[in-house]
Length: 145
Image (tube, rainbow, N blue to C red; front, side):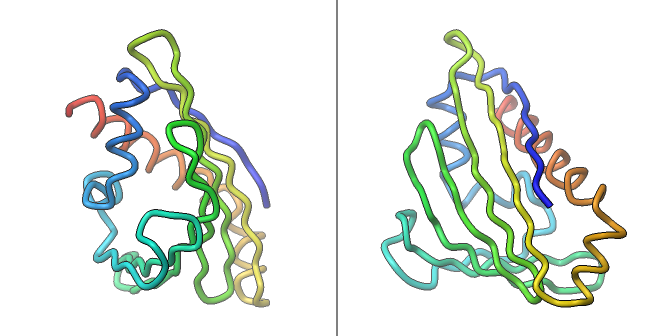
C-alpha cells in the first residue's frame, strides 16, 4: 500500500525542518510515543537506527527506525519496522515564499505476516488517516513555536 499526503505549514522551511529534525520534539506531535532511543550508527545520519516505543490503546508497539536519507532541508527518508510491518516514509520539505513550508509525505507499507496483511486490507483507510493526523499535529506544534 502506498499513498502521499501533504500539508502547508505557516513557518519558514528552515524553522520547520529544525523542529522536525529534533527527536526531543517527537512527543509534541506524536502523543502516543513513549520513548525514543538511539541504538546504533551516527545519530541522525543515514544508517543510524533508533528504537521507538508507542502505546496504542493498551498495546505497546516497538519499532526500529533506520535513516535512509538525510538531505535536509529538502528530504528525510526512513524505514520503520515492527512485527509484520515494514514502512518506508519519504518526507519532502519545500519553501513556499518566505514564510510557508510545503511538507509532503510518501508512505509505503509492506505487510510481511498473514495477520498484518489481513489488517492492512481491512484497515487501509486507517493508515493515511493516522499519517494525516500526525502531520496536522506537527503543523499545530510548529506554528505555535
